[in-house]
Length: 207
Image (cartoon, rainbow, N blue to C red; front, side):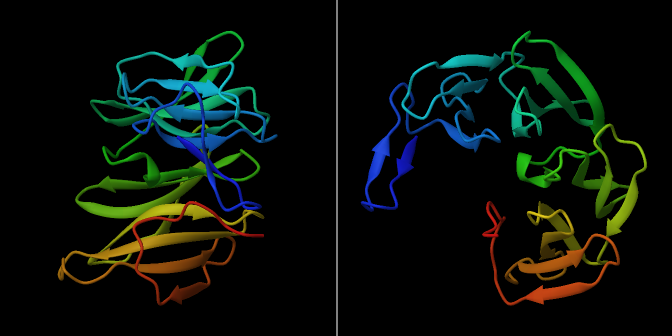
């Protein structure tokens, strides 16, 4: 893994990591990086200078890193199980793992996102042959259907920094060669703003 230095325009390799390591996520205070190891597919934490590399999760090599907890004391991740993806939380200090709830979806990690305040989750689920985005509390309670677009698959939700909007990627099922489209949806009143961009997912939002 590399760090990009905006001042110099150069890249700095993080010691004790490889080019196969992926899904890096900064801790809320910006002092640590969680990532998925390319060698054993488990989850690790490391300091930006390459020191302090520690294994945070060691289950079955199929962990999908989602995010840090809002207070920075744990990681939220998914594991494929029979019913979909089991969303779990690991406490970094103790190593204790808690199952949160199971998302009926076997797709990749970018299909669910934690809200900036750490209290809610938006996720893509496929139930009864229908694809949709749902929003619920982090424990899976108070689930509500948020977006469903007929012959379009809605996926890869991403929260705005203030938690009031979601960007969603839409894919046509009738025309598989048609480019993906972006849709900005207000979480409170479901106002929709389309974007003329074709991307696979969103990974950042400039405040």
